[in-house]
Image (cartoon, rainbow, N blue to C red; front, top):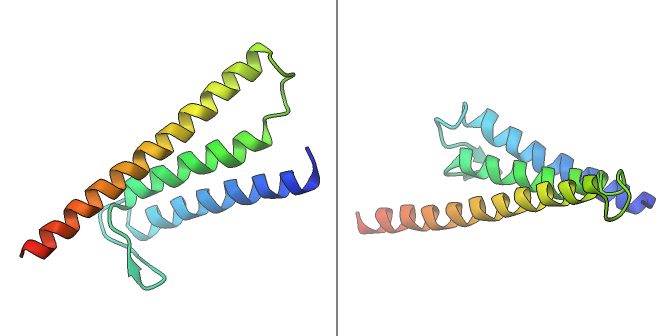
Length: 110
């Protein structure tokens, strides 16, 4: 793994996990709607889960991809775990989008 790959993996992991931590900290565990950069962030627990899955899947997965030799059992298991994390991140992102659209429709109907 080259230096640039290492830096990108660390940045991807750290930034996504930091956003997840900020969302949970500012929302008091998901009970309030936090404001980040002046904008309200609805559904903070769902967004935090999305960022955690993406941070672990992209960043940490990129960091540990060279630990096991290619086509070994460890490499296959690691690949499966990373794919599960990325799919979970995608699913939570889609859930957020659909629930947020539903919240906007309810506000517009009032």
